[in-house]
Image (cartoon, rainbow, N blue to C red; front, top):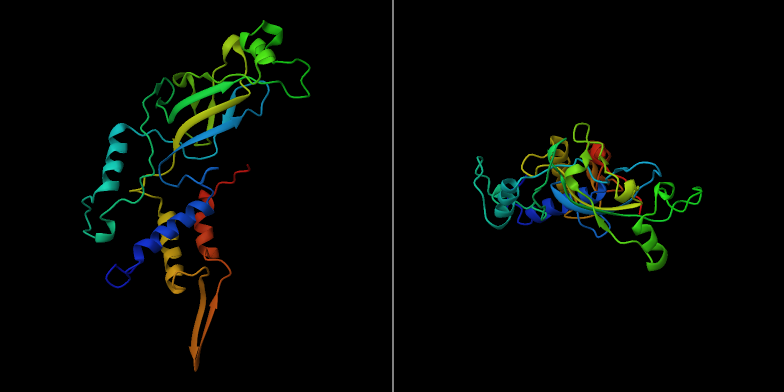
Length: 260
């Protein structure tokens, strides 16, 4: 990889490659925010099951960050940090996304990757005979308020009681039942997900380097170099996409499909 002396715009190309990888892997939310590195997301989730409070968040792997880690990332985003190689290109951390430190401890996983959670109750689905899942168990004040006051209010969920699957990193969470053992219809959850920006998986780093190379071969263009022959005349072939098949294969395990 060239340095700034031989390629003055190398940092902007690397930044463009990183941004394109985040977009390609589906790491951005509905507002365009997000990254493969540590990111704190705010997500609104509909519970698909009518009988239990189990959902899966969209972005994985979920991770709990302590205050020291977040403070170090934030500090290195604003000032150069010392690196063992002495490479000036590594003198600044460009990957602090504004992620927040976790503060809530659970009995099942310790420090939780979930920073906050709220739930609300809604009307049952059309195939349900009862108006509310808990109608047979007693009159719920929130249910009465929904009848006469419009949409139900959001109620806090005790994050310390939420179980998170950190072992297999499926993104599955189990939420305790609400008032009068009601099942929530909708959740608003704030959590942190992603990889350590200073210790990224090798495939992602290789893909970023390959994508930067493709940018260089096209002078920052939109397609990648596929072939180059020089036999009397120079013939150059380019792929239709900047992310070539080999780079796409390296990123395949990190891709995330979200339907809005």
